[in-house]
Amino acid sequence: MSLQQLIQTRQLKSALQPIVDTYRSALIGYEGLIRGPKGHELERPDALFAAAASPDLRHNLELHCAQSALTAFDTRHFAGLLFINIDPNILALPSTFGTFEALKAEAKAPIVLELSEHHPVADTNALKQQILKLRTIGYRFAIDDLGAGHSSFKLWAEIRPDFVKVDRYFIKEALLNK
Image (cartoon, rainbow, N blue to C red):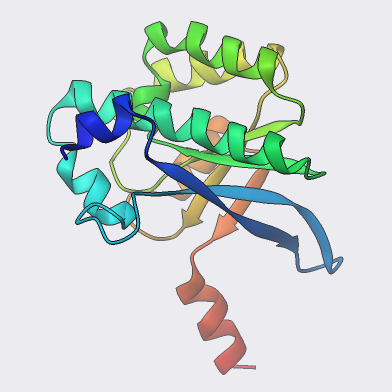
């Protein structure tokens, strides 16, 4: 079964990983992590995103992941924030505002959109404008894995996220070099 078929038949599901504020030792929410059908060649997220070769398919996959995370979170009646990963270039598209507006309207919990580090931001100004609009309807933002991939301190300064998730390399090194 192709990726497009998996999306159309809603066979991609979200696992929810707890997000903990290590300073306060408190659970603050959950991050939606997409999975393909068990045993399928596209079970792992890296395989899913690698299979999304065309921009349209990538766009569909990203939006399906967001919807899947929201459904999983609301179904379980979890408390706290829902963190959803999104490619910043897809978020920056003016055409996605309506989709995120509808997603927010059906959400039972506050949503934090995590800007993923896998692709460089093509148009920072468009991203900033979209973030400003989405903030007005209640979205919050995070930079995912700061220091890895294409996440940068410049992007942090430009978009002023509500949360920053530091790449595990830096945490590991800090713990090793006490």
